[in-house]
Length: 501
Image 1 (tube, rainbow, N blue to C red):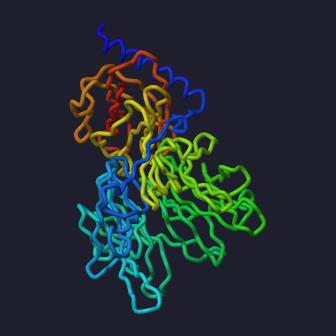
Image 2 (spheres, helix red, strand yellow; image 1 turned 180 degrees about the vertical axis):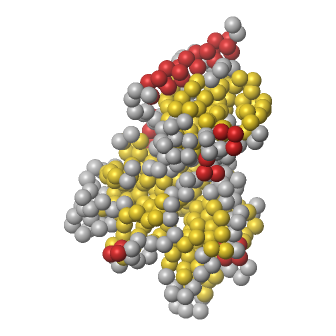
């Protein structure tokens, strides 16, 4: 047997053992807090003089708010992880912009602002926009049906299939309303707000591929975390646990885990701390200082890693990572000699890269903090459409010299899957429109059963610690999923490459 075959055999035995163990006990994910990070200045090329990176995709692009190098208002900024800055254009006649999200194809959404300087202070009037191939378009002009009564003001998220989540305004009453817009069909939907005592404005913040939206519902000073599922809005503010009057849901992953903030103290102080909701049940994540300060959870990836910010009694703020019950200061994971103070973490990719803003060189700059390690995962290729029109996804986090986490999402819950291992990128159809892209295969594969029970809420999460002695190995992974709602009864995930240096 060749050296490659021996190494591969050891790899497969390790993963097989872990799969058996994960059926018996909860999975503990690969710990980013066990790694060192290298912060990179996203605007290092001088294309901007500072800014905030608000959201990122899994292919090395971040979007946010950028300060132009010369005079002028802030613009929407698009940065590649290698430090290339692109200032995204505004609508004709507009002077300012803001970027909020970018999908895996590089399409971005946000706002373009008309600035009025006639008063004592500038006023900014927003239009929700999308940037496709760098060209700006107003979302209002793309609506062909549905909630045509809304003026679209803000665009918060864009999915890979071109569904935009944002905030609009009823033309007749001026009331703010959350919306979704399908760019492929031009149909928009008014999501509505809470009824009864919480009948005020509702603001959306995030949407997963399964169409679950999270945000906040307002009535006067009260602010409650909410989610929209199948057109129905649900109040997530459990007064038996969240004793204060404030909560807010900021992000949701494909497994339905929600993160945000809540006030767990019944004293009217609005003392917000980072919060996670699992199956609708809130949990206080605390702060870096224990009982002191405040904290905010802003994003969660498919492996359950949470990022955000923790403050020291409101005076200083530090970017944080939260994993398996432990909150870690991201600044403790970087070399102090870099000169960075990482203030806010706003997003995290599925392979662990974290974006936000921090203090560097006397200014506020957007950063990406990338885990240090040899090897790791690279996503390549596309999966095929499964139940509910969703493409199942396979992602990896961690490095070969430590724990590796594999996560599959958006499969058919309760159905069988097969994790395949290949040594190349050869392609062969398993059915029309669904192709394995990791040929030649190295083994018959490892079977598993997805958790969940719906047509697209099935998931798999497993962790492997590879045996010592595996060197110079590349393994390509892809999963075949049984899916009764898919054409031909099958779907495949995207392939990923694991490099073991």
